[in-house]
Amino acid sequence: MTKKVVITFSDGSASRPLIYELIKKFDIMVSIIKADIDGGRNGKLVLELDSDSEHIRQAIDFMQTSGVDVTPLEKKISYDDSKCVSCGACTSACPSGALSIGAPDWKLRFQPDKCVVCKLCITACPLKLFHIEFAD
Image (cartoon, rainbow, N blue to C red; front, side, top):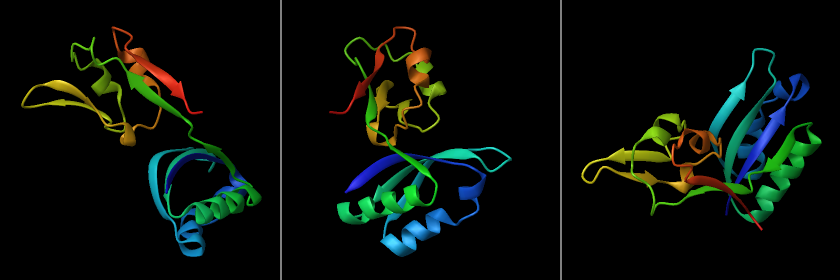
């Protein structure tokens, strides 16, 4: 099972080796998708957790009891590809590489599994083809 979460931490919780503990204690493969940490050791991480559902649940409980706020990433970006002109404006705004244009057809390609829902494509698209979908 794979689950994306946003963790928010402050000074007190930033001093722990949290990623190491998730890997060691809960046998979870952790991918850091996006990190935004300031000099004061406050910040946010977008993580992809890959393990069985019980280990992921235990890991989330562990992070919350350790003073880390954990929010599931339950929304996703979608776009209307039937109206897309592949101008590339969204690709330059996408920090995760979820949007790309390339040979041989030079059409926009969207890889939802790489998307971190930063929403920059929504404002970058001149045709307003991107929108947020919320999970049930």
